[in-house]
Image (cartoon, rainbow over all chains, first blue to last red; front, side, top):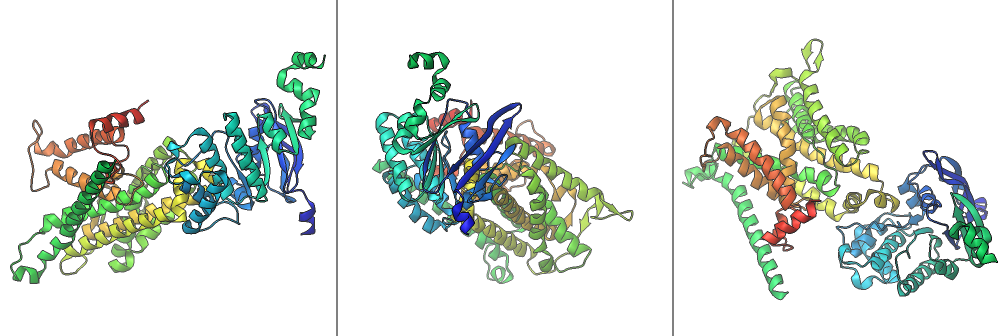
Length: 254
Length: 360
């Protein structure tokens, strides 16, 4: 017990995932402590989503290890990962189309972590609380098809939060939103974090990373390029190069 | 908007009334064949032909409702469910004919053996998705029938071989009435099972799998065991129908216990009535079985189909069923129950919209 308490909540050690000859994630190591908000940034194709898929059990690792509270969870099935308390959203939202907004959230509460897993009646009560948290309570009875894109992203978060995770992996929940919507979504992430959930989020919008994260990990070509406070990391020359190309980085410097 | 709501409620009420009248007639008509009713000069509403037809309809209600659990609710298009019907029929048949068990003791083993078999083949099969699962399940459906006919043991066909299996007649007064009510009881079990599934955590998990299997997995649904459980439940119900069929029909062989066309018929019934709903497959089973019997010329009311001889009518019936399957899948993808639930009204624009949804 004391050993588990001392260990970081999530620990990645040399995580590697190859597709054919390409290493989409190549020896990535970092740790997340309980209660943190950590951002993962990096250019397109840097391996961010692949890394989340590795953590949530959708991909089998080709190397390295992932530890949850000190114990290896590499090769564990996705539903078991959810059960131990790791929830996630998908970048391209995947709502259950035939269900209402409320039912979508309720399914999360029926399954999910050991703290969730309740019968339909209680699950619907919990769904109402979660929908209020993400600001969807007015649309609880709507079919998913009636939701706007920002609302669908909220629903994706609501369903994941309803599983009562200890760690929530958010895959670009702000992509495609306008400035006002991003502010609202930021509020939502802070509200979820305030309930005691550790958050690991992938984001392209730098404002989000700087706004909510204490720490950011930069990925490029599947490897960790830099890690640290967002403001510092974003001024790192290698990071600017990765995003904007070598020539632009030089011009920016001079 | 208000007018629309009133019209919806009226449609729902009409549907309910029609359903109750049909069900009441079907459940009460057999009673007129009882001796005391006949001696009291009650007109006979159910003769032998009536019982045969009504029992067949009830049997298809079981199969279509069972298929709905794996095909409609879980979204895995099983094309080989007739295997479970046949396994149920042969389980009960073998226990009665060879082990000399009484029928009512042998019947519970039909759903059990069918479910065990489904769990066994489901574990590898349900890893396949989409068309691959459909084709593989069809293969199992065909293979089991062939195996049952061709397995020999000590030079003797184990399951009666090509000459089939004869069961001793179940001696009871009013046999037709008994088997009709037994099959209706099985149909009721299937419908209540579906109702329970749709309201339970289990059912929500299955629908989540149908809507997006990866999303279901990452919120904690054990997709493999849920799919296998749904498949086994469908198999158990189908096997129960098969078990009743074997004693009702007294004789079973590959042709009547593993008819390939049942695969298509039960799916068509569920699609026609409305997949994923409680009563849709049952409504589809009644409509389609009546149509099949009508086309085959075994209903009291019959019309001549031009240019078709009596002998060719069953074949023409299959052709018409095939065309109907195509039409239903394209034009009424949510089933006819969609019109009665008050969600939509049958109109040209509905058909046009469906065509847009189902075509590229």
